[in-house]
Image (cartoon, rainbow, N blue to C red; front, side):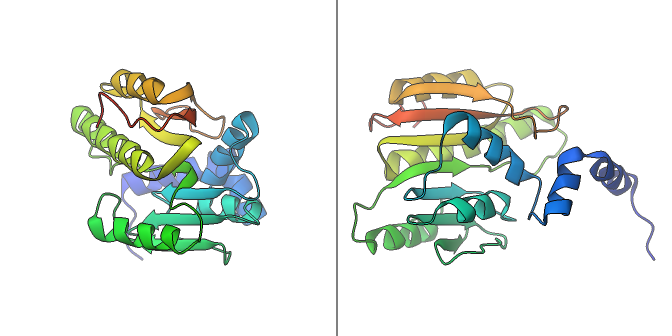
Length: 218
């Protein structure tokens, strides 16, 4: 058997100590991310049975599976280039990268075939960059993903809808939040208990979209 690298061994040790990773295993969840969305939903009442959701960065499917349990009348469109576990006929998986026109065309087709306005009630983004260890570069990539999420909301979010986006604390976050406040009635930042304490991740939760785009970001 090949010897594990030190970084792989550290990851395994951390998983063994991680309460939410353990809870995910015990409950048969796809990933510990399930509990992040559960906590956000409990606090902000994001998900109702008839909601239409666009989920960005869905793999491996922790959030998707949570949504599949709760969206009994609406639909979930989950986007990621990697495989997504989608245990519901109400989940449509679009394979590809957010921002690619082929992906956008597929999303448009799914929404357009619904017989309702081609818009969603909630946009979720758990996208995160592949961490290089160079903080400035990683932060820039994280903000690029946050801007892609904002662009998706500007294109597909219905008036009054909500947006949840993973952010990495650092340069660019204040400007992004300022732009969101110009487009939504309420905007806040929260770090769910299920987020690892050492992680810089936080989630922006914006509600009451005024359908004015994201001035200053896009």
